[in-house]
Length: 266
Image (cartoon, rainbow, N blue to C red; front, side, top):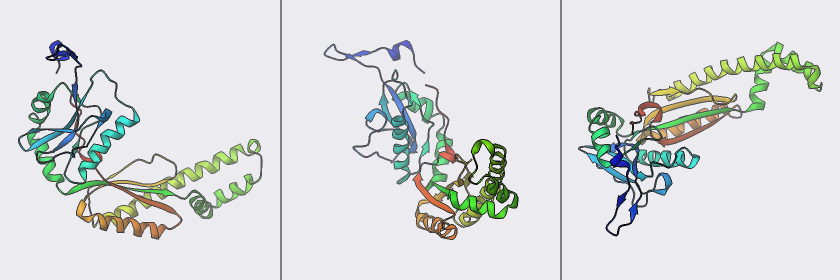
């Protein structure tokens, strides 16, 4: 997408050398979306919009020689996409999408995928992604597992107040029982959560746990106008599970789990 001429520095009217820049692309939106005047993205660059027909790209200028990937970069990428999802449908691009210039954004991204982007944006109209997350309360869930499993109860008693070096095998066996029990409970509790969410949406993605005590991690695509109902549903689950699972709702956010577009080759 770039040629030697594209990457050379330009000279302004005063003879000063201007740094070469690329265009970082965050996501695809309807053409009538306008960023806030003070919106900034990666490296605090102002957010702009590049349009093509009825669709557009959210972009900012970036030094193509500057490496990307810091936590601040990732947060800036998500911040722009998630903020946009509050007011309009947005198709997130994978982190790190850089094109040579605005013409490349139009010709190599928007024009090439016009129909697909337009169709996806229409399907997302009025919707956003939310994350329904639950974390087991460690003391409660361990007690529940031990109470339900006589072998686990016996092992726990055998290691109580005993030196670790003398009870290593018993501790390993207990850990395996607890691990298998957590997997089974996670599957059951995820199913219960999916049943509770079904009146609101059937567009869901069950995420893999990232922590041993994760009980539920479900991404859902829901109409933004029904957020109050979603909050009530998650609140009802939290009340039902009380001190057993701590529930949390995150969003609205861009639909990362459902329509992340490919990163263009820049």
